[in-house]
Image 1 (cartoon, helix red, strand yellow):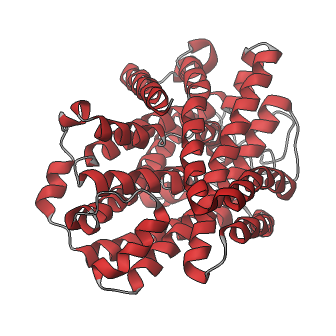
Image 2: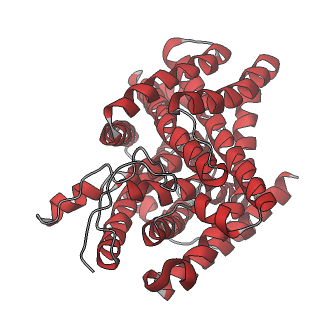
Amino acid sequence: MSERLLAPTAGPDLSLAELHGSVPVPAGGGWWRRLFAFAGPGYLIAVGYMDPGNWATDLAGGSGFGYRLLFVVALSSLMAMVLQALAAWLGIATGRDLAQISRASVPRPVAIGLWLVAEGAIIACDLAEVIGAAIALRLLFGLPLVWGAVLTLADTLLILLLMDRGFRWLEAFIVALITLITACFAIEIAMAQPALGPIARGFLPDPAILRDGGMLYIAVGIIGATVMPHNLYLHSSLVQTRAYLRTPGGRAAAMRWAMLDSTLALTLALAVNAAILITAAAVFHAHGRTDVQDIGQATHMLAPILGSALAPVIFAVALLASGLNATVTGTLAGQVVMDGFLRVRLRPWLRRLITRSLAVAPVVAVTAWAGSRGADALLIVSQVVLSLQLPFAMIPLLLFVGNRARVGGLRPPRWLLALGWASAGVIVVLNAVLIADLL
């Protein structure tokens, strides 16, 4: 059978049809050239691992317990790497995304239910981004939270502009913002000057996590807020934007490059999350401030402790970049789940406007009624909602990608599937603990 490229023309069964196979992949060339061609989807996925929900749990963990929860940050990132690798594997092996396979594999009422859960996850995640961006706008420009939340509706124009310029522009935008976030926290850590010894010990397992109820609560929150349900749908679709050879050999090669892309991107996300926790530990915990629980409080305390007026500004800029990043991924994830489950396609700006409006409404209502404390509480609620919804995407992914009838001879190795099921077990159990504690 001769190898050929799948034409990038839109079709009724293609995931993100207008982007499918739109990014060229060189047939030859050096290692770096091929890595660059496949690099991108992993960084769009990594956005979900450094959002304001992660910021809140990392700040609470660092201020409350110093460096001791760095092991949990690393463990949650490793589990995310495994699950995202399997999502990419499913998309490349089958030529379909997780939503499309779910629709074809379960009764229609179940598919509708899974779609509603996925939409809820996207809105919950978008809600966290709205709160994060609104807090950043208040910190930087003094804008009230309510007006900051409403202003985030304007990101629809950004989506329209980027989508019109091509998918690589979307990826470049995401990578630029991730680079900005990373640089901001590199500066924060340089200002805080943490000791390397305690940091190194923090990456070792601490049995006290299981004995200390407060530490366990934060640890469960870090893990529970890590893997985003919609990211599993999105990743299985984004890997198909590459024009790799649609043959067994071409798909196998694409899997290796896609897994490398996502692993490198999530390693960067791990560095950012670790940096947030390290900053909180060095700035707050080391100075006896173990009660820092929300992003706004943390930002206002940076200047007097570090002795620099730039510290809170840099922190707020990174927070705003984090909120803007989700603008792209939330829109694409919404398109994937709506098209995959319902075969309904909306224009990207309309899809974005609907999702963002559903996220802005509760933020405006709660903030107008309860102020910033209400917004902080709503941020935590959004993470609990994501925790509840995660198994509805995670379990189908593991069932489908391990099914030889679905993936044929491209079934993942047993060790990778075993790690996937182990990760799912840990996440489900710890999320159950988190929910029980909250109740």
